[in-house]
Amino acid sequence: MAEATPKSRGDASRRKAWEDEARDSLHIMPLSTIPLETPGLQHARLIKNVRLQTVVEMFHDVQTGSGQIAPRNVAVYFESYKDEVERDLVKIEKIAAASSFDVYTSRIELRRLNIDVNNVQSLTLSDKKKKELTNYMRVFTRPLVEHVYGSVDMQVQDVTDIIAMFANPNREEALRNLRMMADRLDIELHEIPKFLEEYGDVFLSLAYFKKCLDDIVPEIQKFLSWMAEIRNSIEVKRDARQMRMLDEISRDLTDISTSITGRFESFDNRSKDFWRDINAETFHSIRELIASHHVTIGGVLCGLAVKMDLWKARFARGGGGPNRRMEFVKSEILPGLSHIKTLEQSARTSAV
Image: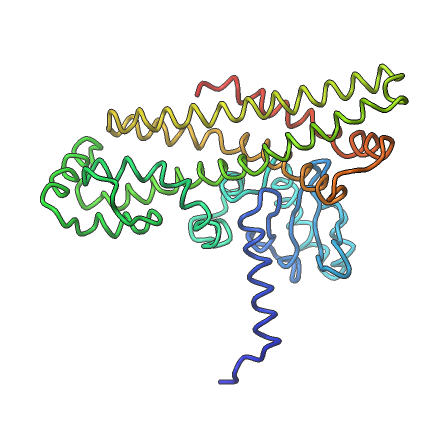
């Protein structure tokens, strides 16, 4: 077998980084995730742009940039596969309507198309991302370990460690507690590892979204301060309409951030309730609750993330004159903001 060359190893490393970026992202879905007929189309990706429109990214490179087209225009690139493209576009356009392309929302959207998602690796977070979420997951693993072992002094990195640890409990008391947990969950003792996998996936999703939120909120605060500086401009002070627009954007971003943060606090409270009264009904209830919020949480965080990412890219060092800032706010921040606001408002009507 030929030895891998530095170039081939470098290509493989870049490919893995490209794939992991998509798996961990809120706004990217590789088309390889979907069973398509058109050769070559599997190498493209669906992405959300700053206006929250879905486009097909045909290529992406540091030198050439990102080649983006509307889904309907994909056929131009594959004229020899006209029929195949038309059939593929039916799936692509349905998925393109999703508000986010995080792995959890994508699973929901693909199931709606009767696409099997259970063994699709690209619909799970990368190992690197899971490690990043270790501290977030401890919030949910601590009560689990404490409930069985009566102590949190255990070396647990992720749910896989917990499953391994619980598969062969090393104390009689732990085994007794596991039997009690199985009884209260109305499952057999040997089904505990399956329950733990399900528990882990539910709360891994919550940890993932919470990490996204914690990354985004500070950027929103910085952006609001940066935007507020425009008010000192004489031109803006004289224009009541522009002042009103700045007020509305500031209020909307603050309300959205406050509301979605409150949702996570409610999830935390519900998970604590589960450990105070373990039973099958409370677990199914919290699982369904969190899953029912995946789409709106993903959509809100995706919209905020792509806007803050573009702001950081355009104004990496802050600054920018009043006119340039105002133009950016009007052309890039305002479009699609009402969609994010509507998504979050729709979630408020759901009891948490």
